[in-house]
Length: 355
Image (cartoon, rainbow, N blue to C red; front, side, top):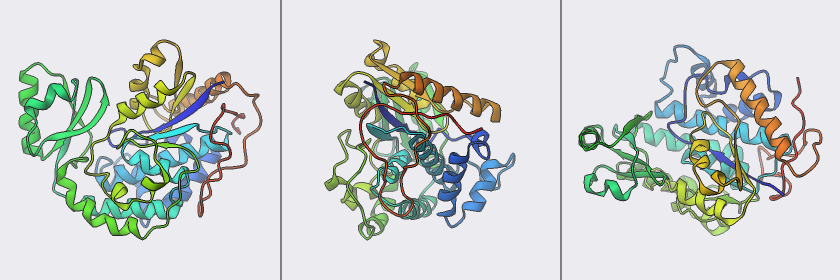
């Protein structure tokens, strides 16, 4: 019997009008997205910039990329659950872990949105910086790292993200290219997961310390420890506040899940297919012992492409399920309380999308 791991992407996966082909046409997604945007103080402005050809605030700016990724990840995850998908585990990359934590019942939606909003306010005041993707292992890059430029994420054995101030990061990039490394800037105006954001982490502790938390009702795999997110970790405000400073360990976390058992279906619930591309490289998936399904296209392609990708994903998930197809489930995470997502293991049950 298959089990489902839902993956939520982070900074760098955003693009203009991401997932907008589902907005208005997929009722469950539309309702969930409106609900989370309403939980933000400036949700209407976010929606306008998201849907605009000429956004007032660029989508790569932290005040747009972070809340919109949180909102879209949450809405797609909740939509899956309302179709009957019961995650065996959830795995979120960077801001994706905050969406997973709300869907998993650690925070209510309103508390999660408030905490994200406060983090964004602090991040907006942080010194400018950037991020760089390098086709190399973290060990390969040790010689070029400085006190300013650090490893921000380990996405795959040979895909590492660096972060730091713009000037020093540009110098590191120039050296890496000169040495034959393949590099690509990450769409970010902030040096996420670097010591530059230590002030953000310390200022965010009180907000997390005064927010009610619950142990996850759906298992979560931490992208910061690569271990299961326990109730003890969920109750630690330092853990959550420290996200902007700590490196993301996506590959170690993914490897731990896919090495634990066969027949894991990895579902990417967010814009793009960055995490899907990484998961397809895992030995279990390459050997046919796992499957990867992305809900949205690999790149922006208009509303028709969004709808086609989403429908194809539902069809594939239905075909992979070891349980009979039924109508859409009525249960899902509550907006003001812990998630009520039913069983936390087992195969996916998918219904047909309302037309």
